Image (cartoon, rainbow, N blue to C red):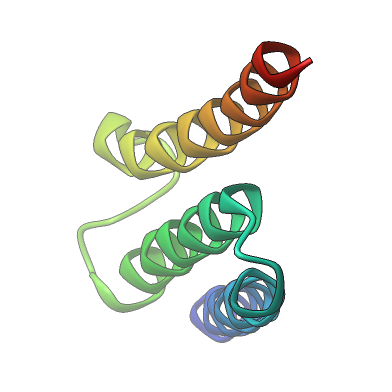
Length: 88
């Protein structure tokens, strides 16, 4: 059952990444691109959790992908606000 739920969450993250890619293509705002990439990283994370027999939530390398995803989101927000302040 846990494998199925990890697959469902991975699919949801993939769809969310496509959603943000759609808005990035229409607006060319890099914040949407970083959110899309972050959700695709989360998709890979949950895919690994669902497919690999050796992966579980208590292993530190599983959190490395999540850390990269959240750092990408944080970087996108900071970069968006930094560019807004510099243009004023």
